Length: 425
Ligand code: FES
Image (cartoon, rainbow, N blue to C red; front, side, top):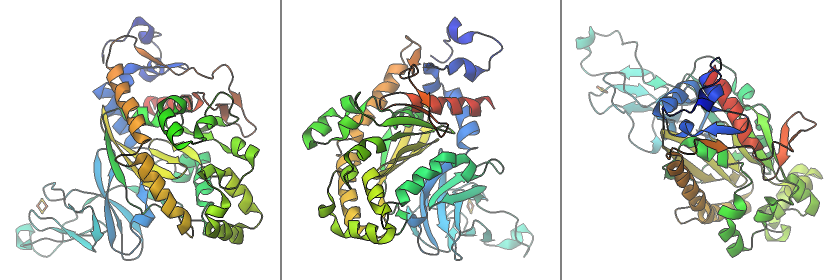
């Protein structure tokens, strides 16, 4: 597959490689299967742009730490004694050993088990045994590796392996407003992601997951069984008659904006499949916190947004997608927790277990599609994947974003446009 480009993909010769592979209405299958393209993605996307790693609430106390991933990199997210969050690359400066083996804990330092070199939780080398072998008391100018740039937005921690580049705020652009929307459902204006992460190893290229997250075409078919069993109204949100829209937010980010549907019903908490009298303490706390605006927040609900390249906020869950190889990635999922919304939090954990847990009924269906997608694109013919759905009817909205119908592939095209700009840079 990797070298079998038809004459259609090889022309015109003056275009860049990714101009040929990513068209306005279709993308080439080799983008999901070619190990050389994956290696290039690591350099041009995963080790360059901002990548979601975790949340500050996972290390709430000084000296807390938790192991995380940044694509192929094993990183340790630490909070130092002064409260600052760091992302250390889990590698000893001596002979490259993995330093930290525990999934999480609390420690001001890490000691490499091989020869006893010890590091502060900022990555700084504290000391090493038998220092005469290194010329005496002057400490070596070495340390654990670090993710050069670490920044957070409302507690969501991102890392960039590039020392320079756009700021996190520039990277997030309009997608930052979607994180604000989520935090705005907390009476205290704060989200926590401290309920624990489920790790789903998926035998598919990471882009299949990213594309699927705001694909409003598939839910009626892939998730029809869960909608039927639970009597869920979610399916109707993604029907041909839905007033919801799919929006490319720029920077490869996209959303399924379900607010038009919920505004039509104007029922608080409908977005969560419940009524105010089932969560009275939460509703009261929201009214206390936001006054008249509480009703709007509780009617419109949480965002459904894919933030390039790997953060997916699906109303009550957050997903963290990390690639491990061209045909494999891990999808980490956790339940959103709202500060001051304990009544909601218990329900969000239960619903998350039911939908994305080990025996959950939602993610298992998606994963079946991802893995069949990967097997399918390994076949040689046809070479292309079609992404034209909605091209004939999408519009630019008043805010300047390209917007399509609920079932259109507008988000995918936004993803690919940004992908191409990074890969051609
Ligand atoms: Fe870590 Fe030697 S490899 S101390």
